[in-house]
Length: 169
Image (tube, rainbow, N blue to C red; front, side, top):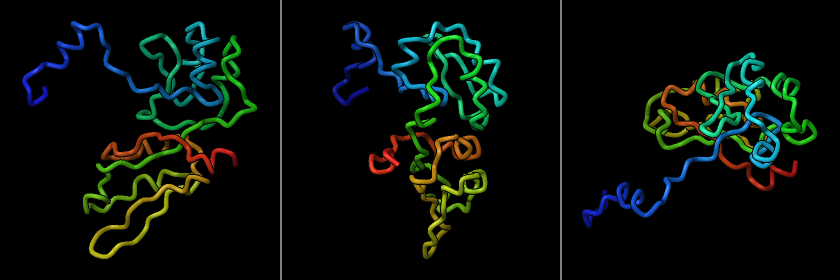
């Protein structure tokens, strides 16, 4: 509620505005445009995923839930899909991990769970005086698999846009 006493939730309802939903993270080798254009919502990719990280979003389209685990890039989702949703010629993910302010290390609590989970060694820890080492993401090494997201006890890691200089690599 704002300081002026207006209930923005009710105001939005009465004016027909919908709250914006965060963009869903799509399975590897798919993009929002290909999912919107070709996905029928059949859900065959959901049971095909051995990591059980593919779920159907509110619109019945595949999305990733990294809280349950990481993407191993096995390709089972792409192989089982009967529609042209997946394109294995493009990069698997257009995102990389991003560490937020809730990170334990940033709050002076020693934690390196994300670095331990990262098989690509994309998370390095920068030493600092008077506190635990701070995690940093090497954008050129992060493949966007989500292993660090699942491992973070503070739930401080999300996905963010890949920097443009690394996106062309």
